[in-house]
Length: 277
Image (cartoon, rainbow, N blue to C red; front, side, top):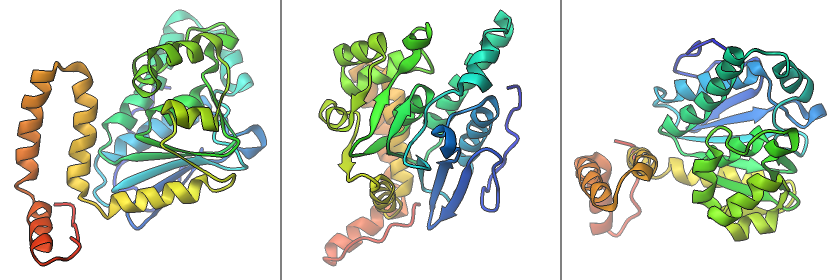
C-alpha cells in the first residue's frame, strides 16, 4: 500500500502485473483481468492502477483512456478474502493507509489530463462502481448492473469520494438512495439517471467506448485536457470565480495551433485536423 509512483511515463511497453494495458492510436486501454472472480480489486491492483494513472499525467502519447473488464463483467469491487477479511484484522493506522491509498487512485484518475471512458458490462459493484464513477464518461451494456455496496458490508457510503461525486452525476436524492440501500441500478435506469452517457447492446460496451475514445483523440486534445481540469476545479468555485478562471483557460487555448487550424479549416470549408498543440 505504500508503494508510490513506481511506474513512469511513457507507458508504451509497460506490462502491468495486475491488469492488462494496451496503447494504440493514442488510446490506452486498461482491462481488469480476473474473470473467474468478476475482476475484483486487491491491495496490489489498487496501487498499480493508482501509479498507472499518475504516470499518464506525463505521457503525451496517450490522449484518451478506456477502462473495462473481461469475462462479461466490469468489476465486483474489493476481493472479499484478499481485501475485506484482512481489513478486519488491521489497526487504525493500517486501515487509514488503505483508505487513503484507494482515495489516491480516484485522485490520480481525476488528475490525469486524458478523458477516461469506462466500458461497463455485467457487474459493476463496490470499488468497481467507484472506478466507473471516477471516469469522465461511462458506456453501459444492456444488462449491466451498478451498485455501491458499502453499506452491505457494514460501511458508510462515503468511500473514495462517492458522497462528493455521485450526487453530481445522478442528483442528491438518487445518490442517497444508492448509497443508503446498496441496491443495484440497472442499465436503463442508469442512463435515465445520468450515470451512463449511452447504452450499447450486451457485449458491445467496449466497442462503443473505443469509438467514443477515438473521437476524443481526433479532437483538440490539449483543449480537452483543459476542459477536464476545469470541470474538476470548478466544483469548489463560486460562479463568478469559475467565470474568471475559464476566461484565463480559454485565452490560453486561443494561443494554440489547434485554434488556428480550426479557423483555417472553417475558412476553407474543410474539416480541421487537430494536433493537440
